[in-house]
Length: 272
Image 1 (cartoon, rainbow, N blue to C red):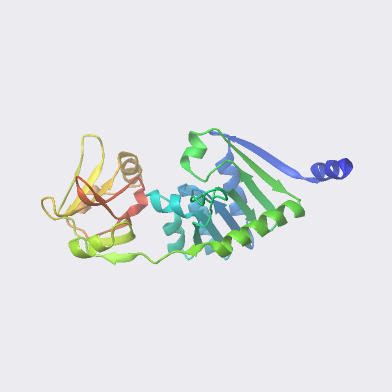
Image 2 (image 1 turned 45 degrees about the vertical axis):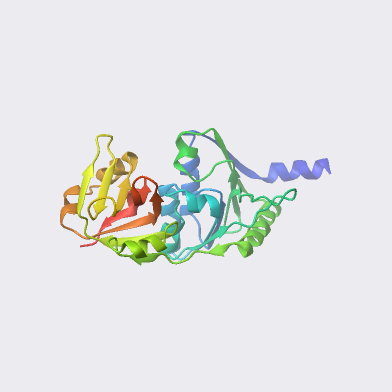
């Protein structure tokens, strides 16, 4: 038995990465770029723009891409990339089926692994997030040439995938139709219209208002997202006379009313 395990370890191709800033993201990007037929991802949290864009590009190239995320985290984190991926025709499902065996409390889908072309396994503590890459102490393994390991992870992915729920297509709403907005509090929505006014606070946050006074809808892009948006060449002056499209989870703030708040610069674009 020991000899069998030793031979298995020797035959494996294993790369090990640690974060922060240990090359984990670049290693994943390389594997995604080299994918030929299929990519399956089971990830607790997926918010990283570069990895999400790489999945979208693989899909454009004809690679079959499936992404499974934890439902609670995806729905609560305003910059989760599940809708971004779905809009690019990637199959995305959310898992909220994990239960405790002891007292039936809700658990989470806490896996962090990906299988590429049924040959490459990526796993470890590393979520596909900015924090995992640049802030947290994480680990990542890229394992090749192990049919048994890859098969076991593929079987687990298939089991989880059958339990996952497909995404609802987000509603398109008018920012000035407050009754309709109020009916969709807590939902991921797309809102299109011309703003009444906009401003950047002293703290560097962008506020876009639709209406006057307390009874209005407001979009808030936090400082980090605004910095990225401006760095990509977005002209804020166009907010004064152009129709814009906003995406995100609609909330009813106790003090400020109907809002979408996010750090994701991809949540806003000029329509016309």
